[in-house]
Length: 320
Image 1 (cartoon, rainbow, N blue to C red):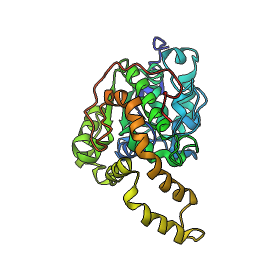
Image 2: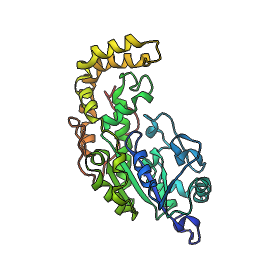
Image 3: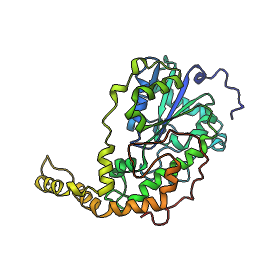
Image 4: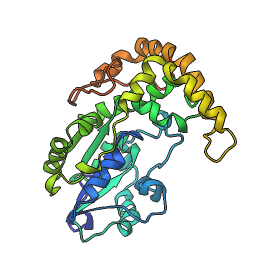
């Protein structure tokens, strides 16, 4: 498909930017920062969750299940071969997305979490596109999304390692694909929080886009990694009594939190310390290969291309 002439195609008048990364990794933040430039436009007014382009097109499989499981789906990983099977995919995608962009802007941004495993597919369709991938520590990301997980895959702590394994599998796939991507920038969420001006300068230079005065640095939220680190180390044991009293005092009231929060607080203390050992034993080496340390949740090694072989689909032995 890349050999097909598209010299007069409307997308050639713009710089397309695809943003990918697992949910709660900082992709929405990065998309918002880029979209705040007067020279850029993100998708708006689509009427779908987070204005993600995957939800408003029919050229490739969009959302493929729960946010904590989708990368295991056989259709989650798309490559050049998939693009070639649908000769009109490029035109269909453009027709679906272009009404929701400001086509008077030079840079057009599309952010969908599953772009993480579709970079080769999208590059085949739009060879001049630029790709921005955002990564966050696997334990922190898993803790952040578990409220959306199923009951047996981490929502109430039971099965939590499966959430971490989902992160590892998705990033194994991306690491292999990244070796084929010409215009790629990987941002670490941890680095964005620690040195936003420097990281946003890297982003601006990569996109050839004016993010004047470190635009967006002030939009950085509070990094909650320290809270997650305490939870990962002890299961929240030191705060359990106070949290249980709070839940019991407010159950059934408007100020109350769902009963599931009470259940999760109790099961965290019982299960998370054990799961820490399980994750370290079965997934630790693969996590280190991606530049993260299971004992330090707010640090990351700068990203570099590496040939990481994804493990077979399915649960890692013992990751339960």
